[in-house]
Length: 272
Image (cartoon, rainbow, N blue to C red; front, top):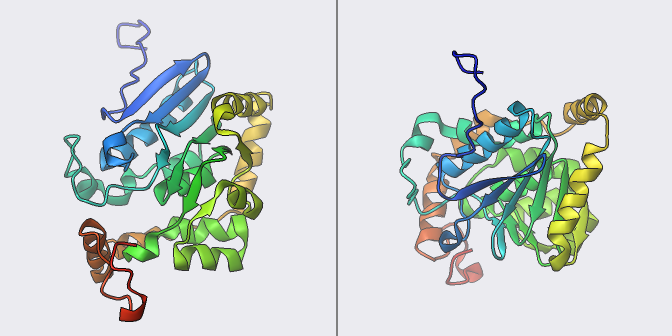
């Protein structure tokens, strides 16, 4: 309510032109829409996803959130070139990792469903794992390439073993190898895989499945799961973001070359 006592209309602007928020009945759909940069998330986009979660939890007319992408990309992670061209270049430097939506998704009282339409890696993979249900197109691929960039991602290191076990987590985190939707489902990264043309309908079905559960019971079940699910060391993550390896890893990616730490016989000549 406003100070005048009149009901204020909800503000659905997520603060960046690269995120769209749409209301479909009681469900909010947050679409990552930055195709010319392959949906790479700027700091404002990370913050906008966090805003979308908060919006659904604070609006009595909304009961759930869907996060999806456009084209053949869901979310490939954060913008690595440094070109955060949505007017907030200094935002991440000011508030650092607090811009990230991961804790907000994890603790969201309203159900969050990830509808993975294509490439899903880095921050996108974290969002997929933290969502209450992830529905993936059969065309989707999954990857955790952070060590190839010199980043110690505490979220991935904490969450992946809980999904796939220690042996598989070591493999995925230390090699950055890509897996298809079928393997991701078999490993336990995600819960549902569907034909690509059925993704939207299957996502809506997943939302309906979640909303049939009693809200308080569902929330307490989520709390119990979270209590035993991946303890994240934010201090280690933040410290790693200014390391020499990150500087070299991001530079190599931008320059489309292999990082200097790779032994000569294993260099591909291109970026990893």
